[in-house]
Length: 222
Image (cartoon, rainbow, N blue to C red; front, top):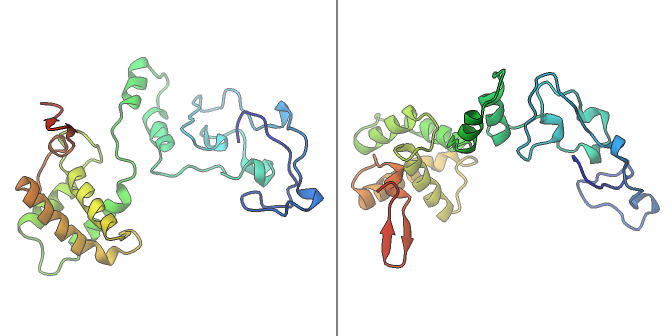
């Protein structure tokens, strides 16, 4: 909850789920006043970050806490996930005494692949556990994934591998994070698909992400 019009509610109910609407106490109350809403002014760290994260996690350290509000007004808590845009902004700006326009532009154009880490960890573990070691295309794929800096630049060669793995796993209805034992077979299939499509597992993202209109294709950069 941040700014807006919100009704008061009885804290005895869990408002994250269904409530017994036939009970008088479950009815919404009057709108909260401005003073009742969580708010901060000039937090000690000098930086407020809002990327759809909780208002209670918008500053580090935060001068307000979800513990001081009813659960229905502070259900999202004080923390932000490590692999979220808000956490990324704090990592980019958190130690700066002054944030420039170039800093803002850099953040807007940031290509950090925030959601890739869990899948990457599963694949690296599968590669490490491969009996007999790695050779050929699998060895090359492992080297690419191990050396990746997490940036989805046009010349990076890790995202194409991850994309093929994710696509093939999704087609089979497999969530590799909850079923890591299936990772070796999916990775083998992804390597085979890339060899068939591109002739190699070492392919830049600019070659994989192609915009097609009708019979024409265009690659960027050319």
